[in-house]
Image (cartoon, rainbow, N blue to C red; front, top):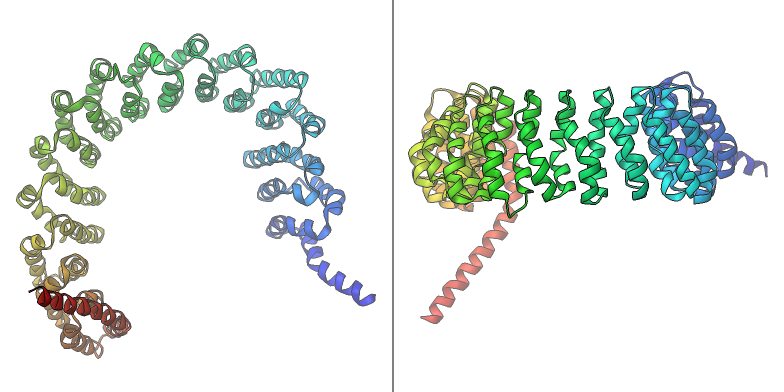
Length: 617
């Protein structure tokens, strides 16, 4: 019996340590213990967790914010550890205390856990335990409790009786009229969420007045959150009610004195458009959209400029082209020459998307002149955004009409002083090459691509080598053999060792797409020649290159040319060269069985085909 008691004591010893750590002066120890609360609760059992652990945690709420945040997070998953949903009410006191602390992050996590725990209550327990908690938070002296209360209405309201629902609506109205801006802001933030669970008749009679009041608040931080609620409310109401109850407030927000409120309207404009439907959009929202497109603040114009494509795409199809041409394009033309580069860049990222909507004729007549202006813009981001979206225009009118204007823009971007701009245009080059065609590329752009291989920034040279591989995939190995490989091989004789290394990097990637014949005939001899380079960095890159291209060489070539070269490098005077040579020798040896097996299959099918031909002849 004594032995049994001792084993129990031994098993509970780590738990005792964890509980002691909850009281430790060291914050990190307390935090570690909080994160292991579920282990402590499992060891104590459900009853002791309810009667001892939860009260202890409730009493020790006053701690560092980091510890309180971890505690709030843990308690949200504690229902099963206190005995299931019928005992979930034991978790409310500590979470209620956490929901009143000063630190916002802790409060938000406590409310999140309270919502989880509330959802696990039965309808009866919800009214007995959760609703009184909500009412205490609403009537709290400090604004912290009242802000937390705003997050609990939507989870309680659907499952309570009608009298309690009336009380909840009255309490929410009280919070919307609170004297503290932080509380009104929290109410505005949760208004849309609460509106989704309130019956339509009470939405109109109780919540719409709250919404109108918040949208007219003297604090712009409250008014901008009311814009978000506007989307949710508009989705819930019939079209007639939207027109009478929501649109006046929306018009007011579009013309708000605060640019932050107008910015929020611009950000949410497409969501609002979808919520109100095409008819109200045509009658009311088009004019509001125009107003925002010519807003005095650049931030607002930039935000609404990014919505041009989506707004136009959601217009009524019957009137879409007419509305775009008469009501949107005149304002878009002004934005093309906007004094703020962010506005022009935002517009350039979406304007090409109008081409499929307008069709070939209107694209040529209306949009093409705007594209040409943007391709000559002094801001590189504007030119880059146009070039990166050329596929939209290519599908409608083809790219040839833009090609002559594209060239100067591409050249300027390719030579831009900012290396990130040069990097971006490299990444678009394969797509451009496919759209412009091989002949145009060879005449106008091939020299640019070769020039990037000699750039002084390594990231550009690296991207340029990958660009070469993609171009070969686009135009084929025969094109590579004639057009770019001779120019790359010349780099192997450059006096600058960095250019010789870039040559090796190109050969690495080209072997993958050029095939065995070109690799053996053109690429390998240059690699072997560089094995005698005076710079050690070049020699060890030769070893790495030989290993990478070996899968694309015949076994006889590897035995006759690759292995002897690696053996020489393996006794090189430089320790790094010897290391990579040994690594390459081991790598090739490991790959040989796979290569032999692959080649034996190839030989089997070749001989079978020869026999088949003889039989048919």
